Length: 237
Image (cartoon, rainbow, N blue to C red):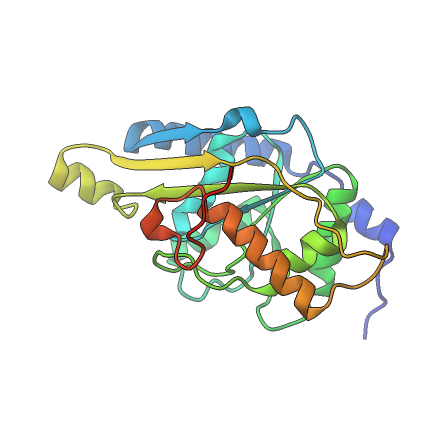
């Protein structure tokens, strides 16, 4: 068994921001393609904090909705996501590797990924995560515990985003059949939190994680069309 890395070693390995040239190139490509292929509308940019630390949370109805935080902000973003992506097409598996996302394995403790995320946020970084953990058709489903645990454990503000395509991200099919670009909307909510659990340094329990997960999903749901909200059919002021 290898030696457990220290906090300072994680800070050195995940010095924020990372891969600035590579990620700027990818962001530029996304922005160009979005203008050509998509009728993309962004609302709520006035809610964007000037800096971090910040945890961005959003829905995951399609592999392409991961571009929501990239296209709608100018943040030097880190992402944390599924290392395997078993249902993703090969073209979608390549992008996270090039971006160099913090990778987690579903069903494991993921202590290394958690420490990497903590290193990023402790440097006032901005980290994106999709609480449901996998791509699925609307509406919203039950979140995995990871995002809620991270929000509680690290105690940083949370920024909800909702990204939705009424054309189901069928970019070329919409151009061919409907003679128009696919419509995509990203709505940016107001920051909320930090979510607290009481004693500093205390590990959150199952009840706290479930409550925090519900609160996060309600914030995301309020930014989506009613048909996509599932059981989180609430209106937030």
